[in-house]
Length: 377
Image 1 (cartoon, rainbow, N blue to C red):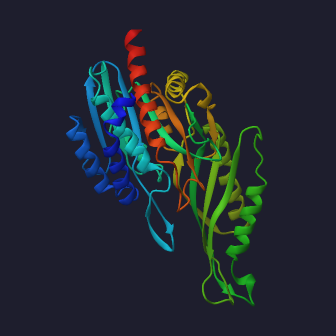
Image 2 (image 1 turned 135 degrees about the vertical axis):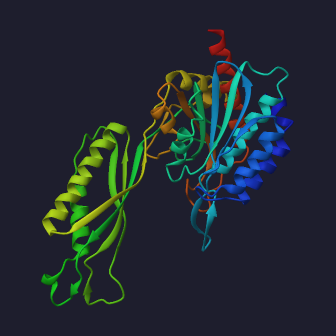
Image 3 (image 1 turned 135 degrees about the horizontal axis):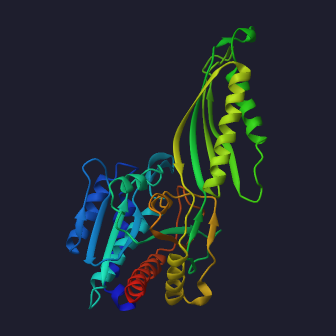
């Protein structure tokens, strides 16, 4: 593995540099798709692109068993050094580099592995909808094992260590609109005060009580009401809600409670509150078999002392839709320690780029061990 990797090290560095310097936001990863397509074709992959969306899939090998490795492609749109722009502050540039690195490593083996291997480059993870589009395209219908990877911040995993699974929670984002009537500051009884309604929503959300043994939360993340005139009571407002739950079952209970609380508020104030579900990302469904293979691969690459426990995190990733929507898939996501700080989604996020090598080797071993284990049974 060491020799295999070193042969492609300069190319790996150049790929990461290009992807980092050319970020593209969700559903607009056009140049990223073309860039990856070049490497897939040069490596002899059977390539699949899509007429109605970004994203690309490469495939090598033949056989009854199919193992897939997935990378997310999109960057965030955020204020970076005083300017709003696309920015790879969640590590997707590294994830794409690692998956291409796995392809290069496998293609350089003296004997090709017995089985089919897919390299999935998925758009729009940050929107929580890219995986669903890939599922709709039927690209995982024949997949038996699916591996993902995500860089982890220093607060979770130290540099040089790795976890065999990331147990993401479920996430839901809701946009709301309070539709009321403006009134004069001297005559509040002739209209509605959307700010007071918003405060009531906050109070009701704080009174939601569910099983404290299962992590969960709900909070208002945006509230916009009123204009330039300070003597006008705003009857209407826009707001956003962020819901988190460690399990899909808890998310369902939390969502029901939230919508009941908002309906009760609307009824009390006699206003209309419109809710729009913007994103709903599933909690992790980790396969014990895939997790075990990833654990052994981590130990082989980093050593036994650098294998971390499964990582429980309130963050989310639409990777989890693959196993949820296709229950036959055995899936897990590698949590890669890399000295990442100050944190994911921080506009000036940095990490130790040498961890990309670790990720490539661990994922490559996981693919090979999966094919060997399953074909020997």
